[in-house]
Image (tube, rainbow, N blue to C red; front, side, top):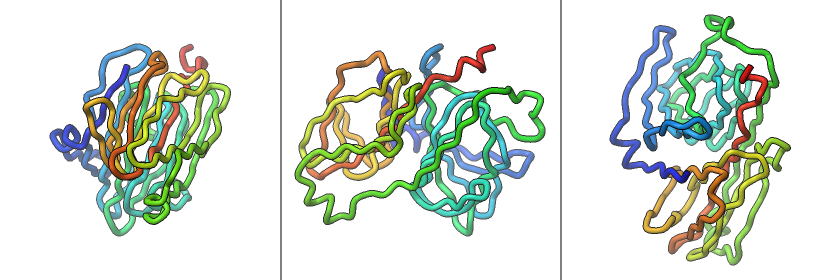
Length: 245
């Protein structure tokens, strides 16, 4: 399965939501999530207005969040642009509190989730099992470093764990081709364009556009454009079998 997430699609379905708990936000989905038992990925942008609180909650699927602009707090931790947060299934986190400006963040999942389970209201739905948080502040190259990039650079931000969870960065000089790299036991990963542009066949994708590639795809190439590109890879483990019981 290969699914492309485009800004055009996100712009076409941007919608405003207001919950009874006070959480207000705009949501824009990069693609329509497919039906599927193994993979039914999601990628959507949340625009949370200034001084709004997204209360503490959990999801029943693993997820990454990439904070793209604005500042605030997630729990007691400061949010600044390009913070990456991973929360495993049934792992409570938050609240997410936006600062004096709109806080933007993209949520990525390999398996579709039915929606936030707010605490303590849905504590009865919480399941015992492994809990996991990962947080990293991502750094991109300076413009002059990117322009002088002469060879492909690959970096593990979070090295692969036994179940396939990992975060990596790929930096490509202009007009350079690369291919997919799955981690063992993962069910797939997102490629997120951070800088520059990338071409997948006849599709060109720019900043924050993304593509999900499931683990059954073992041959897939992509190329940078006329400028160097920096790509973020978010590798997903399967949902822990504990939660299937």
